[in-house]
Length: 435
Picture 1 (cartoon, rainbow, N blue to C red):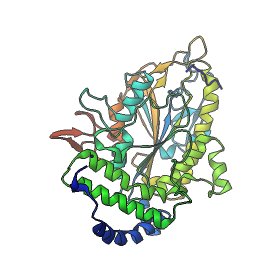
Picture 2: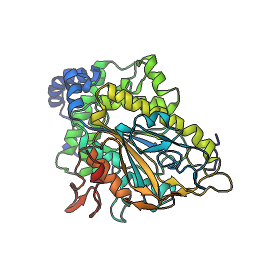
Picture 3: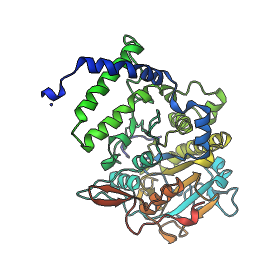
Picture 4: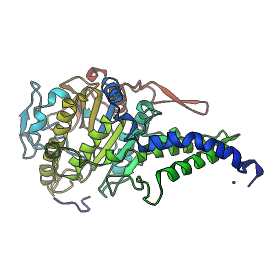
């Protein structure tokens, strides 16, 4: 496959030793206990409650722009159709690309959006739009989807992360400019680029558990002293984010697939993408609200059919595995899976046998909780050049994802005295596909 360019010191802060030592002993045991626990959500009761109530979202981010014609909206026999056939699915009348035979048997768990017109075929700007559902303003930056889901679905007492972003490839990395914006760093992503586990989670061997607990108690005591009389959002955000560190240190096993069975590993396949999606399943099962797994190299300006001939079967296998695994564990009804990128690809085939950037008539898919099984929304013309039924934009898809996850997109945050709704005024979810 072609992976190239086709693509501050006042006396107020002095330490009163006796006061500090008096408080130190009270917190050490509790801190040590939490640090030694596997993670808070390992308790059977909490896990069962999550299965009943807690909704989670996994986003499979197809970076570079996957072709709708080689996935969810094939046009066989047309000049734009390419060499691949369409095959029937387990939903009568719904056909998808022959490159996805496993998903053809799982459309009963799926919903297709075939009428996206997002009007932005730029990698960076398109990715930012899809991850926010709207464009930033000059004086206001909006939080991305993961930050909102972390804010709305996360638990304040959770030891696990709220938002994890896997993106191992160099192509397109950072173009979407993920940011919690005014929500604060507490809800920002843990970005895993060059490794599948956050660095520095393990306690250094030369520091005992007791020393570690006392250091954390000292840090917390200084922090509380500094915060007195300083009611600043940045301080609150910093303190909240730092408070999660101990919990994260106890959650190392989330980032290790070695305990999974051989059959489970084989189900997802040997690719890095497959193994990171397996890790995403482990995370949502433990209570992580949002995990994004990026799979790059879809930018097929040349050799489109060879590229998709390799990448689509991998997506088919991994997505089908995730659906089956979640279903077997009783988690599919509480987990929403989304597949989308920054745009689709042109129906027209260029001189390099490639498809170029295209944002006028493309597709996304939703699977699992919150959506109607087997639903298809929207329609493109016979060559896939334009939307002829049910046109929707990035905002509508964003609102639909929020609604499927149990979040009212009309909810408002406040930045100072300004109310900021989760989506722009007038934007509504696609209610016809919501369960």
